[in-house]
Each structure stands twice: as C-alpha cells, then as structure tokens.
Picture 1 (cartoon, rainbow, N blue to C red):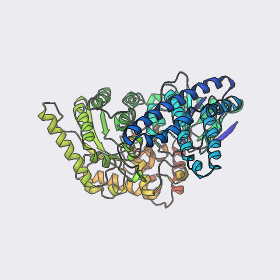
Picture 2: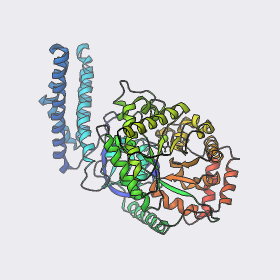
Picture 3: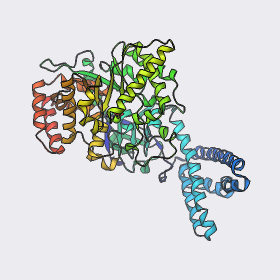
Picture 4: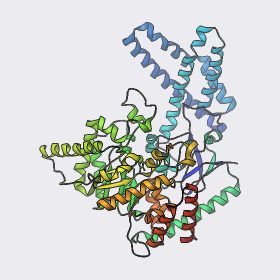
Amino acid sequence: MEIKKGIGVSPGVAICKARVLDAEEFNIPQRHVKPERVAEEAARLHQALEDSLRERTALRDRAAMRLGTETAKIFDFHLAMLSDPSLVGKFEETLAREQVTAEYAVASVMRAYAKDFLAMPEYFAERVKDVYDVERLILRHLIGQTRESLTKLTEDVVVLAHDLTPSQTANLDRAHIRGMATDAGGRTSHTAIVARALGIPAVVGLNDLTASVNDGDLVIIDGNRGVVIVNPDEEAIDQHRQFGQRLAAFEQSLEVLRDLPAVTLDGHEVTLLGNIEFPSEAASVLARGGSGIGLYRTEFLYLGSETEPTEEDHYQAYSRVLEEMQGRPVCIRTLDLGADKYTQARSPIPERNPFLGLRSIRFCLQHLEMFKTQLRGILRASLKGNASIMFPLVTTVMELRQAKMLIRDVMEDLEEEGVEVPGDVPVGIMVEVPAAALQVNQFAEEVDFFSIGTNDLIQYTLAVDRGNERVAPLFTGAHPAVLHLIKDIIRAGQRHDVGVSLCGEMGSDPEFTLLLLGMGLRTFSIAPPAVPEIKKLIRSVTMEHARQVARRVMTFDSDKQIVSYLRDQIRQVLPEAY
Ligand code: PEP
Ligand code: MG
C-alpha cells in the first residue's frame, strides 16, 4: 500500500480500479501488467507500429513530392527502424520478459538503442535525434489508443494521468469515470473544475503518482483530504468506505434544501447559480436547487470536437440550456481559450507565456469570423429564454467596446437576413484581471453586470500560476490583496447599480461564504454539487454575523491568519459539519 498526498480539489471518495494515461513528453515509468494482459499489450504495440509506419510513409511521400526524393530519404531511416525485425523483436521480448506496458517496452528499448548510437562515430551519433523522433511517434500512437479507450469505457475506473488537458477531460466517458488524480495541476486547473462539476472525487498535484501505479491496481481517491492510496489494505478500504458513506449521508441530508430559498436567518436573500461546461449539466443545477446558470463555459464546445463549432452547433447547445432552464437566467460566456491545443493550432508559433498571451477575448478579437459565428448562435438562441452574454478576461474598456460593437454588427446582419433577434441581451464582463478590478468604476458605466472570476484574479494578482502544483500553496483567495479587489468590485456594483456575482471556485468553498456575504455579495455562481452545502450555510447565519466577520478579516494582514479565523467561524456556525 502506498499513500500519496496531493491537493484535494473535488470532494468524495472513490475506490476503484485505475486506468493510467501516460504522456509522451515525460519519462515513461516502468509499469507492470498482469501475465494475461501481455498478449493485449503486444497487440497494442503492433497496432501502434502499423499506424506509425503508415503516418511516416505518408510524410515521406509528401516530402518527396514537395522537396524531392533525396530530401525525403531522411524518412527512409525512420521507416527502416519501424519495420526492423530485430528492433521489433526487442520490444516483444521486453514485453514478454518484464511483463510491462507497451509504452514502457518501447521507451526502454529505444533509450538503450539511442545510447548505442551515441557511442558510435559522429555521423551515427547525429542520428540519435531520429531515434528519439521515432520513439515519440510510436508512443504518441500508443498513448492515443489509451486516450481513445477512455472515451468509451465498459467498466467503472478512476483515471490517473500526468495531466489532463481541457480537451482530454471534455472527451472522457463521464458515465464510467469514478474519480481523477493527476501528477500536475492546482486547485483551479481544468481537471479540478470539471471533476467538481461532475461531482466526482479528484486530487491533483501528486507529483509522481503515475509512476507508482499499474493499470488495474485498486486505488482510493479521497478528494476531501487530498490523498490517493495505491493498492490499499483491507483496513484502509474499510475506513474510506465508511467515510464515503458518511459524506453521502451528509449530502443526502441536504436534499431537503433543494426547493428552499437561500436566505439568511435574518431574512436576506441570496441567489445561488450554477457553473456549467456542458449543456447536459443544466439539469444538475436544477436538481441541486440552483436558480439559474451564472457561468456557462462555452469553450468546451470547441474542445470536445476536432472541428470548429458551426453556428448551428452553438445555436443548438445554447437553445438546449435555455429551454432546460425555463426562463431562469443563463449567462453565456464567450470563448475563453488560450495556450491549449485548440488555439495553438491556429497560431504559427507556440506561446512562451500563454497565460499572458493571446487568450480569451483577445483571441476572439483577432479571430472575428469565429467570434461572430458564436455571437450569432447566442443571439438566435437567446429568444428561447433569459440569456445574457459575458466576455472573459477583459482588460481594457476598448476591448469591451469592440466586443459590444460586434454584438451590434451581428444583430444588424441577422435583422437584414430576416432572422428574428432579441430586442436586448444584457452584456457583462468577467472581472478577473487586476486591471479591470482597478478600473471597475469605468467599466460599470458600460456593462449590465460583473462576474468576479477569482480563479484568474488570484493568479494574476498574486503572480501564481493557477495550474502549477509547485506554487499551489501560494494560490489563495484569502490573500488581503485579493480580498481588497473583491470588496472594491462589489462596492462599485452597488454604487452603480450593476449586478455583481462571483463565479470563481472561491464561491464554492464554504470557508469563504460568510466573508463574501459580509462583503456584500448576493449572487454566487458555483459548481452545481456545491449548491446544497453553500445554501445550508447561508440559511444558518445572520447577515449581521457575516458583516462582523468581513470587518474583522479586513483588519488582518496575512492569508494564514484569515484562513484560520474563517475556519473557526464556520465551525461555530455548523459544528456538526466542520
Ligand atoms: C475564473 O477565472 O475565476 C473563472 C471563473 O473562469 P475560468 O476558471 O474558466 O478561467
Ligand atoms: Mg477565468
């Protein structure tokens, strides 16, 4: 039994068999398979070799056509390696002798092969780059097979990976995924957000977890304590089963709250909305007692498919959500991508500093046709319910003006085409960059609402990468600088009569509920599974108490002090739960 500590990002306990997803850019760890699985690994290996050979032959032929047969000969060396019986024989031998994954067999044989080349005279030593290239090619095909299999599972599993990109997460077969754990990642990485939305336990930032797990090993994922146990003993299984049952019972006890309002003991009403990534999640917002959608992350429409969504794809997705919500508010955020495969594929050079790069609204304003296609879809669908449009990562008022002008352009185009359009759709921005937070009074003149994106606001205020496990302890909403910005945004909203909600993950964390209420926040948009718990808290406090807490917190100068004070407060309010 091996116990690994990471960052618990989605509560609950999963006890299930593991599926491990390797990453070709990182060292492939030695991972064993059961003797009966060796033949299956050999079949995967041969499939990957065949696919690699086909891909490289096509590349060689294309190069021959464009660059001449002499240049294309570089690839003949790759083709020779891929079909070299002695090399393939070594892969097979390693598989059978060591009973390891095909990935490890390829990586270890190719590494030894590369060493042999390096020991040769200069001409051969140069070719070691080709050996690495072929290794990566075969690994890409092998890992691609696993990734593909995770989209159509036949049994329940927990997925363990070095990291999961947003598109990988979007494509997982959600019906069979019981939990997730990754070596990389922080509290607000996409894996964390999706796991929370799906209500499955998840732990990230485990560093070298995947090196110690074999496919099929039994694993416990404890999302509350941020622990993963590999090959647990009977006692650990029993303990966690009981803990899981207690959590489930607590959750069940909250079900009675579903149709009750989120109102404090002294009568102050609060609106609890849900964050969603996929149209199918709209139902879970209602099932948990949310009263609308405060953040629909539409980028998952782009990530879930190989091709850019059409206007019809947009229209269908938004219509479905709006219809499902039957007149309740639905805030549709326009595409918020950057540095992922999707936007990189459209950029000639990968970005070195993607979080400060061509992200979100900046990307949209440089890809106007794509942006207009989405806006057309939103505007057409908005007739089906109570929609609003929100722009992400707005940093300057000019960006907001440009984006609003595009809405007007699209509206005019639709009208000219005789398509029915709404009279008016409320438009707002995410306040998630310190520049926007500091200029919030100016923005307030030009928007209908603000939504505070604490995930990015914390990242940009504290200069802490939200997805980097190495700096994860520094990522906190309790930093006084972040709290001052949040307070100022709420105040500006009150002063200008502009609605303010908070849709970052901080809103789903019960530790912050009292503080945020006391600061004047009246609309929370949170992960749907968090709605009952936050509602319970709101119904257990008075606004007077919340205001006292906020006043006290603003006198502290360290996040540690703030967190420990907030923990004390929440324990006083609900001693049975915390
Ligand atoms: C945020 O930044 O707080 C937010 C809600 O947006 P995302 O997590 O999608 O960047
Ligand atoms: Mg954001």
